[in-house]
Length: 315
Image (cartoon, rainbow, N blue to C red; front, side, top):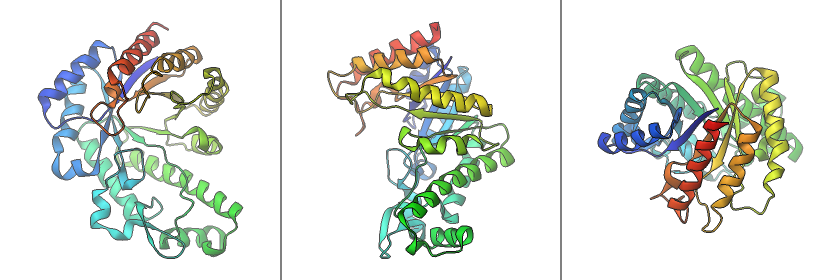
């Protein structure tokens, strides 16, 4: 089973090298570098050094655009939207939303430009982070797309029609990005994670020919759910991936874990290992200490995460 972690990173190669040496000692296979938009302008070392040093240690670097367009994942602070207000989502009444719109060609083009940069820096995978429907965007791009697909005005769509459209937009976005990666940078593995709440999207996204790798993230460490309830979710995705020839990965939570619940990291991890996905990944390195999404007791949380990583290699 492949293992890996996400990593917020650092522009100083000395610190990056120290961290990646520890990752190598954990026998990690993959490193997901959480790159923010601002890094492309002001912190290029956060892009360059993790990929460069990870490869020296035999760890595969994978790029994830953390918080891109104020939309994907955490760390939401979009440099692009500061300069391109036309990329924002728009409310039904015309008011701007803080998030960007992945139907908007301006936003899609920016993501492609960033993919070009990370491909040039030696990243071997690109991870489309938790694309999910945008139910409240009525920007010109969304309205134009709806009219093209259905010959109607999005503003007058029923709730059911809106839901169908939004799900289709997710699939189209993943396809557009995966297609671009394979055409422009065929060496890159294309990956995405769809949350359990978006389970209806698993099959249509798995049908995308240019997508290599599909996963989900059952982040229940702080929840009261019985961990055994994870089993059918994992098996459903595993069956979908197997039938479509996709790599199946699963994420384990090691961020914002409440103090006293760290043992659930190990409990969930044991279920994941038992179900044998192709890869098991942990978000995030050392409990995401030092960020607004840190575990309350990152040292204890990370101890349990490391135990899971060790067990995964023994399985």
